[in-house]
Length: 52
Image (tube, rainbow, N blue to C red; front, side, top):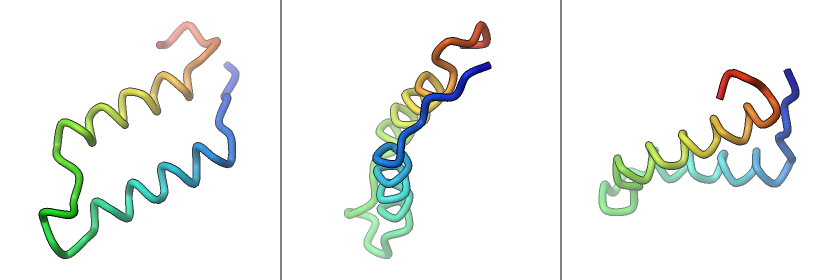
C-alpha cells in the first residue's frame, strides 16, 4: 500500500482542524464540509491501493 501525502496536505488539514475548534460556531466549518474533507483525505491516502 502506498501513501501519497505531502506536507502541504498535512498543513492544510491541520488548519481545517483548527477551524473546527473555533469558539464562534459561525466560524466553524459545516458538517457537510467536514465530511467532504474527510472523504477527500481518505482518497488521497488510498491512492494506488485496492482499499479505496
